[in-house]
Image (cartoon, helix red, strand yellow):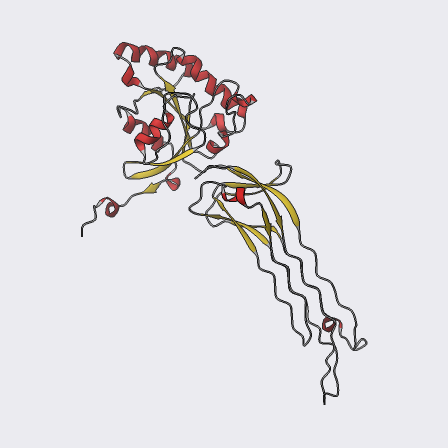
Length: 344
């Protein structure tokens, strides 16, 4: 399934039905009078966050969403039928923006959250509504209200617990494949990952979600490479995992490149908890590991962890550190019953 995180949609709520001008005319009925019913209300347009979606690809093939109009009122005091509502089902983490792509209308961060985007028009009153002691035969009725037409943008920011950061070929996809059932594309050339990948990682009877985004390069905040187009997907993460290629000849420069891009992106991304890991240590001997770790520690000024996703060396220790930086209300705990293998 193709990944899509930004799309444009056109919505329109239904117009209300007009009121009816009608009078009762029956044989052997001495007194008639007005009996025109009211028009039905138009359908509204809603957006709802549902489970099982992680892309907006459905909105590439359908961009127009028009709710039904309300039916007009009829004689014999019959009210017109209301128009049916229409619901846009989107993944959790979707932002609804106005046409200018800057005004935030709503942010759907919880499963089942539902927001009205365009309200349907009210139905018009029939002449029965205007009957009074001084106006016993009104010949007026109200038309229904028009619907609301809007152009909106849907922008998806994946909700994950851990976000992977690093230069191209830093080993992010390999880490995701080694720790989860996700199978991202892995190759020995830059920009293998072209869209975000999600994986569920488990450690110490707990599970959390890891998001792998395409690699960043210097000048990404200015649009170079893939730019900072995908950095929004790690804005909601509780902790960032910064992977550094241990085989690189410019380890300190690689570290500063990513940090500079985070600061240039703005917001709270640069202030999030961050775990720095020297990756691919299986390709280094003991002296090279020590030298690379010292160089990276001097550049970062914090604790450095060593890991090899291919050799699975240090993976568990890194996952436990990530786990400690995630609040318990975001984790999924596995019960002992889940660990017991099924037997016929």
